[in-house]
Picture 1 (tube, rainbow, N blue to C red):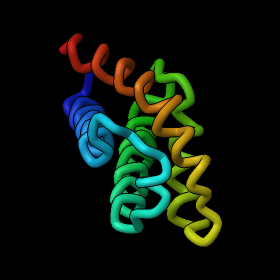
Picture 2 (cartoon, rainbow, N blue to C red):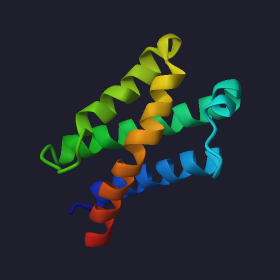
Picture 3 (tube, rainbow, N blue to C red):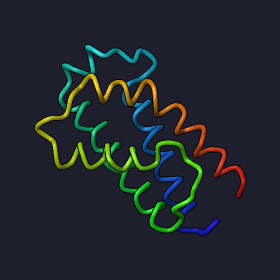
Length: 112
């Protein structure tokens, strides 16, 4: 694996870990929804995850990460559609997709 790809995978892992750190063990949607600073921090981490994935796909288009293209699309939606960001959708990404992505990333990082 190219060193650059490994760096981007590590960036994704750090951003996912940061999101879960921001939320703590409680992971309360209503706290998330009512805390602008928390929402903005998580949105920024999603931007980083999507940008890192975009760079990975440019270097290794056939990487075996499920929903890689949708991850990039989510980044674009958060950045360019900032006025249409839906807290429920972001919460769904956090709850349903980030744990699986983290596992996929960790598998790649353990290979090296």
